[in-house]
Image 1 (cartoon, rainbow, N blue to C red):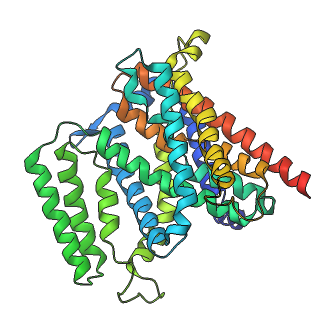
Image 2 (cartoon, rainbow, N blue to C red):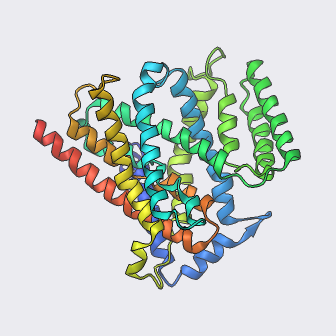
Image 3 (tube, rainbow, N blue to C red):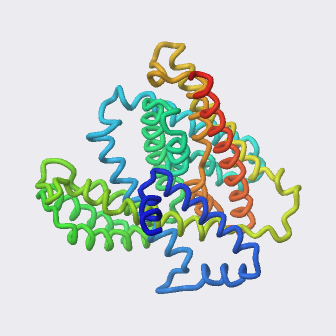
Amino acid sequence: MYQKIKYFFTLPTAGGIILMLSAILGLIIANSPLSEQYFTILSSYIAGLSILHWINDALMAIFFLYVGLELKREFINGELATNSQRILPGLAAFAGLAVPAVIYFILNKDNPTAISGWAIPTATDIAFALGIVALLGSRVPLSLKIFLTALAIIDDLAAILIIAIFYSSELNLLYLLGALGALLVLIFLNIRGITNAFCYIVVGIILWFLVLQSGIHATLAGVVLAMTIPLNNVKANHKGETPLISWEHGLSNWVSFLIIPLFGLANAGVSFAGLELSMLTHPIVLGVAFGLFFGKQIGVFGMVFIGEKLGIFKRPTGASWLQVYGIALLCGIGFTMSLFISMLAFTSPEFQDLSKIGVFLGSLISGVLGYLLLRFSAQKSA
């Protein structure tokens, strides 16, 4: 039994499965006799922050640290190291961000409060998307897996920039200057080639607190810290890993099997009490769901198709147009980042719940149809 459990956690699909189960559990609890206790616990305060805020502001900062480490590695030594490698997934990611935002805007333009949720359908959940691709195994060409990974990484970078620019509150100059000072210390440690993790962790915690108080969303401290962790030209550890690679490997399981599932459990809980079918046609629900499902596929597939027809670039090697379309559908799985942005975009619990319903619908339909299409296209080409 132990060996089977251990084997499960080595599967590339394990993180996505646990995240899905956590989200389902959150939904079940929120609509069970335990719902009152569930929401009471999330709203309970510890050291000046609610449990929900500790999850969304502190634990998610570690998630963004992990994402930042991955971004830095890919842009320096990985799949996005050269301009030629960046152009196709970069343009596809941009189109896959712009079209969903436009769809959401068109459907919510008459509501000034709802407009702030325009970024919710722009995100792609890399864990879910790659998990589905992993389930399909050799049915998906390696070139498409690399394309989806690169696109999702650029998508994460775009989400980070959106959060920093559009979802920061009124800035506190004093704390902002303090955060800048902490950043300079981290840069100094990097330049000096210091690899001691303790130094970076201590300064990183100070940076997180200062960013939290500054008005910029605290999770961005994780990204900033990641950019200063040494990758090249430093002494490797006994495993032959540089600090950045060591940190990335060390955080991987914690992020995949604790932080992200806990986030899903805490943020996916939508109470269906009083839910009416008419709510499914609410502009926020439609804007998010249509943005994820229609916007992502139109943006990503459309950019790849037009780019190849114009001779700007070619679609991933060995991939049929049907397979490219299947990958574009999977980009509509927004889940983690979409839920996160929805919590920043709206202060109203009603609007947050409506946006979550849209995320669930858009992500579910995109994931199921993307999986079926990729499976069908593999059989057709066999």
